[in-house]
Each structure stands twice: as structure tokens, then as C-alpha cells.
Image 1 (tube, helix red, strand yellow):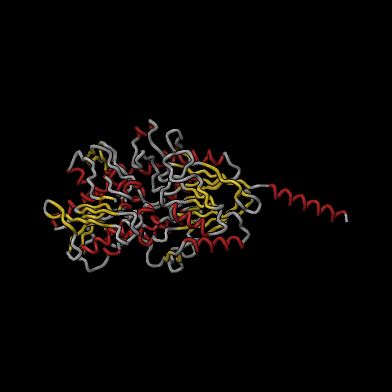
Image 2 (cartoon, rainbow, N blue to C red):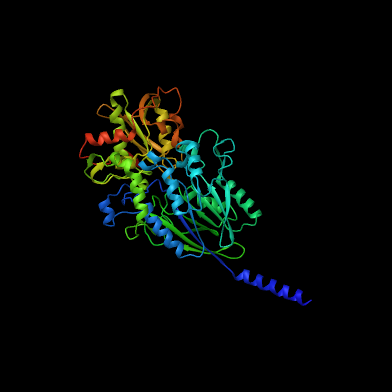
Length: 525
């Protein structure tokens, strides 16, 4: 009898203790790193050793090593996760593909990552090689990849990890339109993020997991929709939209975290400029009691880890001859910020579109289209290196020329302005053409008006029935960023022109010092 009483008292004591034992977890996170292993400037492009020594640079893996170690020391329980798009964005990816990303993420000790659209830039083959090289799981819930032998059995929809004696469920999300953004191949079928997440939440809950984090490379708007339309998600660690969330900066697009119901949403801009640090307290039932934090700036005050600097310098050796070559000069900063170029005419867009058109004008081409998603950085005033040009145009796209009628061009412009509210990369930068668009009109319902095309020394209204010769990059010509009207074998297309970065560098060199400008070719009502 006495034994039974003692057992009951012990059980009551454990139960009372468990109710009072809130669980604290620090979620450290990055997103949209884009191979920026070295520090970057305030314009997200390369930063010189001199400027870095003077504290003018941001990010770089060597700073993350220091900051992550410090953050882990502040926490009893922490995890480090990534919101996707480690691939693409610098010569490190062009030269090494995913090998350097794998090495550096292993060094930093990531616990999990979701698949970004750029992880599919070189097809499932390169993604699989990366997955084989990393020491942590990679997750993606909203796709059927059972028919892709390189991913089936290796890629997971969700995983369970343990920290401090507690189980944590991690679910991955990738853009539903990845097939338009990259090259996942015919065997990967993407699906609705809400249904995918809820399915994995239910599966994890059935296994007794009550702390669930979604690693989402789907953008700030989609993350809010997922939070509102699912149950059981505690935290969403975002990416894709490069959203800077903060409680202290007037440049933030929302608070850190952004709360939708009981779900905390975070994101930390891009390029390693910030390390996200969210401190979450859960009760014993897995409910979020509090979620607080702020992205930590990886500025010049964060010391660089010496061993990491040495290793990256070693890896950069084969790249230096290419990227340090001065190819031109700029008379002013050439604006390429995605927040500008994805919603309006911008100077880097005019540069690239003008360069494309200039290269093929002698072939009868009169119009150039550049997708803003292909423009990845600004160029600073002064000497312009090939490395800077490649930071703007890292995708190794080639020039494509083709024929299309005026109606198709109008449809292309409608597609280009159809997702401005989400700051998507399909926004068109153009040459040889002007147009006006109106956000108050529904997408693809006549947002575009006053389309004019170059003719002689001036512009004339576009003729929907006339045929025009157009130049774009091979990604867009083959339907990327929603430009399905450019696809097909009926357009007299040639998709194997010179590299777009080389074309742009040569155009800059022929116009030194290049004077950046906008001229009103794109207007908004």
C-alpha cells in the first residue's frame, strides 16, 4: 500500500513539474544566401578587401561562423535552419556548383534546409549531389518526386529532430511555380502548399510531435496564407521573397516575427546580411507562449573567423582571374535592387535590355525583354569588374531571338505585371518598347496599355497582327517566369546566342564611362 502511495505522489510531482516546465528554443535561420560566401557591399554585390577591412561590408560565411557560435552560447536549446536558395548568385556556384555550399553548411552545423527554386537550376542531378554531401536532412513537402529516381528515397517531406529532450517537426516548402522558375525536370510535380503542410502536420501530430516548424521557400505572402489556412504550425521560417522583417528598422516590410493567429513567421532578408534569431517558448502542450527576436546584422562589427576566411580565399583562387578583370567603368551607381526592378523601370534593367538589343539589332531585332528575376545586384560607381557583372547576371543565360506577333507581346507584358503585388521576378525590363500599366486592374485583365514600339527614330502603337523580332534570354524564351507565349518551335527561334553577362560587359566597355539612367519607358498609372 505504501509503495502505491509513493508511486502516486511521484507521478503527481512529475505531472506538476511537466506543466510548469516551459520549453525554450532558439531558432537560428538564414535564407536566400545565393553563394555569397565572401562579404558583400550594401548593394549586395562584391566588396573589396579594403572596404571589408574598413568595416564597410556585410555577411560572408566567416562572419556567420562567429555569430552562430555566439548565438548558440546564449541558448540552452537551439537549431540552425535554412529557408532555401543556397545555390546560384556568384562565381562560386558557377565554378563549384553545390560543393562549396555543402562544405560551408556542414561547417556551420545546419540541422535542416528546405529546397529553394534555385536548387533546381541545374536539374535534380546537382541537387542530389548536394544532398549526398551535406550532414543534415533536406525537406520539401509540396511535390510528388516519387518518379524522379535521383530524389525518391533521399528527399523527405518532413523530418523529426530532437533538442533538449523534445521532438521538433520540420516541414519543407518550395515555390509551387518552380517549374516556371528553374529546371526541376519532368518527374517532379509541385502542389498546393496549404494542403501539403496540413498533411505533414497531421502526420507529425499522430507521432506525438507538438512543436512544428515549416521551412518555407515560398515568400512572405504565401507564408501568411499557409499560417492562416492551416492548424498546428508554430513557426514558419521563410525565404524566396528576400523579406526583411524587423521591429527596429523603417526598411522592414513587417514585424519580426509576424504573427498570424498563433503562428510566428520570420525571414532574414538575403545574402547572409543577417542571421535570424527567434526565441520561442512553448508550453507543455506545444503551444507558443512567446516568440521574440530580431535579425542580427552581419556588419563589420562581427568578427570573421580566420580559418574560414583562409578556406574561402583558397577556394576563390581559380575565380580571381575572371572576376577581378576590370571591363568598364560606371559614372554612377547602376540601381539593381530587386525591390525596385521587380516593380518598375530600373537602371540595371535598362542597361541589360539595351545591351541585348544592341547586340542583335543588325539582325532585324527591334525589342528586348529582360526578366527582373534574372537581375541580381546593383553595380557601384567606378571601375566595373567582370565579377560585378556576374553578380548581376549569374545564371549563364544565353541570348535568344525569336518572332512573335503584337498580340503575343501584349500578353507577355500582361504576364510581366501580373504578380507585382508579390514582387515577383517576371516583371519586364524592356528596350525598343514603352508601355503603361495600372495595378488597380486585375492581373491579366488589361493592366497594360499604351504599348509603343520603336520605328525609325520614334515610337508607334503596337500592331497586334504584326510580327516582331524580339531578343530575350533562353530561360524566358523557353517559358520561364510565366512567359509561356514565348515558347514553341513555330517562332523562328535561336536560343544559343552569346552569354548575357559577356554581352553586357562588352556593352559597358563600348560606352565608358557608362552613365546609368531611366527614361520613362515603363510608366504606372
